[in-house]
Length: 447
Ligand SMILES: Cc1cc2nc3c(=O)[nH]c(=O)nc-3n(C[C@H](O)[C@H](O)[C@H](O)COP(=O)(O)OP(=O)(O)OC[C@H]3O[C@@H](n4cnc5c(N)ncnc54)[C@H](O)[C@@H]3O)c2cc1C
Image (cartoon, rainbow, N blue to C red; front, side, top):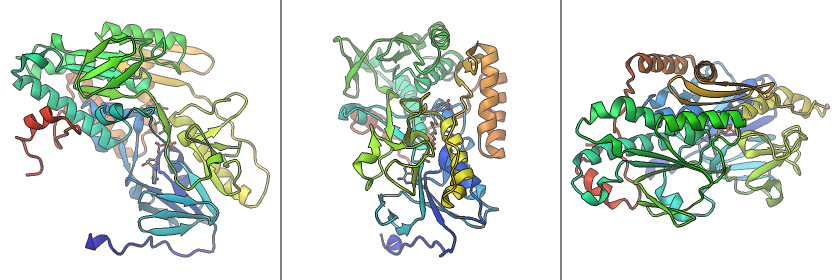
């Protein structure tokens, strides 16, 4: 494209050490915010021009929140910073021997590199699953899923084909971690409170929500009490939970399970695994099972000036022999730790090792229903846990506008039982979904 032929990074030369940060998620953003302009030049790269608050993606997908209420505009966040340079670009490769990163707008030298690229969905090599299931890692994923869900309801209201009538409203969630549990609860609430009003002639007893997992409990990273409570609440809400159930394949209409059983569905959501984002150019020995091995200072083992934080990092410590949990708090705390200590490291002074403070974990199941594991083995379920969940999520959203938008939406939902974002703004047709294409190509987008 002519316009894109002449690109340059346009980063000013500097006499200060240059810190390049890949990824403006919870880790990278906290590092960039905490580093001093007086001491460092900071160059922050992200594929998007906003920070994504991933814990609330499921609410965007299930029409509870608008997408921009969970997206923090990155340029806004650095208005007052003199030497932070944000570039909306994907870092395509890293050359650690030359201390350079490579992008479509050119290469850039760094003194320090902080890799905070997060995690991507792991399909364990199953191409069919990758092609036909929906993921929930980014805002575009959430908007695609929202369109897909709403289109299925519209399709169901138009359908005259008896062969698919029985399973057009089957939804299958694979992976009963927080994403699967929260999404299953949100779908059940849509069914119980809203959809029958939108589609009075549709029979919603035919809408089935399946939650499948290969392990023997839901929310495996949480306590046994939290798992049991979440399972009980979900089942009361009509979610069909199948544990010890390994999915083998999905061809776009049929989910095949290991023991020969199958479930028909046009909407399968895959949240059964993650692995570190791919960072081409790094020596193989720097990674273990897709994550970058670091010492207790977040520095990649084998490097002197490349660091990894958050989901992409694998820091093995006595209490965390398999690394820290893939959650926002470890990424935030590593980001802050590195911002605080990088100057001392630059001056080759000794620093204290990273010490993760576990603030607990939370998952919501629905209105007035959540589970909370707090430090000291304290467990809350139900309404108290839900209030804790609401408070924590509001307080960690990155901008005041985000907080305000989310809060007003939640208050609206609380009093009206409504989820006002059931719009199909950008129709989504799954690759190879010929039947959906037939139905929705009639409603052309963009015109
Ligand atoms: C649906 C969902 C629900 C979740 N719920 C919770 C929850 O309730 N509680 C909790 O604690 N945690 C939750 N998590 C996990 C939590 O969001 C992550 O652990 C956290 O975001 C990790 O932060 P990070 O900085 O490592 O990566 P991320 O926040 O994923 O940020 C990575 C950033 O890097 C960018 N990037 C990647 N590669 C490149 C590249 N090559 N070039 C430029 N930019 C790049 C991406 O665009 C992204 O912005 C959830 C995650 C998901 C997906």
